[in-house]
Figure 1: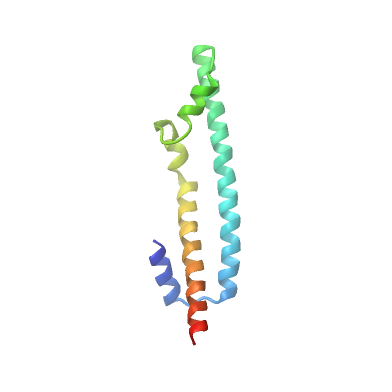
Figure 2: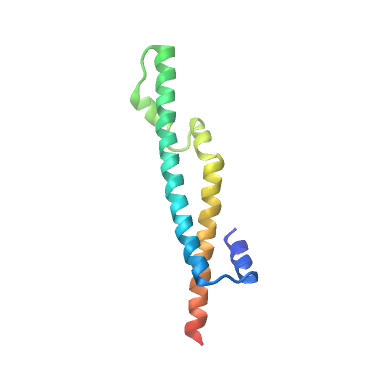
Length: 111
């Protein structure tokens, strides 16, 4: 995907100012998206705690922590959603922009 973005940036030339502004916007987006994801995980853990308390009368915090960490089927809604997809896309754009700036700098230094 990064290669695709780099090729798009080669076809449609963008100035360094546009790249710098894009980097800033992407970093703000990734920071906000990461914080949103973290908040959603905490809320999801509370949801599971409430459901287990209602069902069994008690909720084991260690058990909840173990099923909501790592690769667990309980975490699919946390890993695969629109937010994480947009994080993936914007991160690939960020890498492509940094690579394009680096490539432009290399060409300028070479001349």
